[in-house]
Picture (cartoon, rainbow, N blue to C red):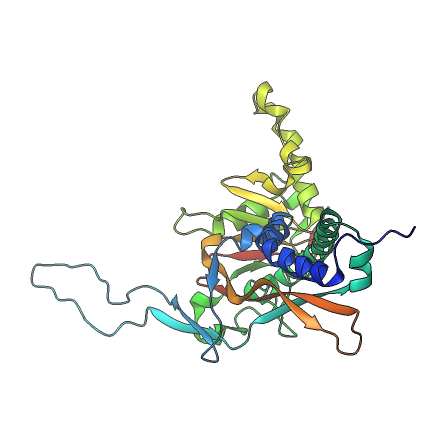
Length: 336
């Protein structure tokens, strides 16, 4: 006797679609949980739809230039219109989409509700991995092709002083230029506690405000992360025995997403980060603006005459923004 499915294909289709939507928030959570660098950089989320054609925000353009030191009780101060806020804006959002084709025949062959839900979860897991790769790569991109404006544009190492970002020209706004250092050189001699210099610490301190408010996040590629981990062995002379065994372990164990400490910052790495590159970041300056209508939403698609086939598309519509650049920075060209 042949074995028939325990639920009709039509009911299976409804279960599939409803399960996709039910687990959508979990898919988003799992996607960002597996991207330590992107999750840390984009910890701040905003909401926007670009409904008026562009997304606008104000950035700090400097200090009050009328400030002065009084020399007597008859001294005067000057009042004038201040330009402490400058308008930044973008006119497109990255629209990421991951299509998942489904088959009524395949659903029918997966007999039973439990089996079908297991199938749905497998489809979602693969879609999540694909979305993760897209977000991760675009986090380090330059925004070309209407993608997310990533770190190569937010904190560039080339053309600094002549770039335009979010419609503010660096040539007319010194506050809008990020710190950068190219050709950093050998980590052994120029890196953390290097034999000749310590450009890494200098960059970290440069990206601070009057000696305080240092960066809280350091992002690099895997190789520079490895260079830094090797230096941890040098701490044996100044580290308690009880702590020495813990140095670096969390960054390569099951807690890899926690990164490793660098002064008061957390250091994480990502394979999508350009080789030999280190970013110094104040995460409060960065935000990922999400469209609530396409925030990891699954959209059903009918494939017309292919009546046994249909599709679901995982969508995510976002764009980045930054409020301050001159105390965020990048170093490139690190070698062993």
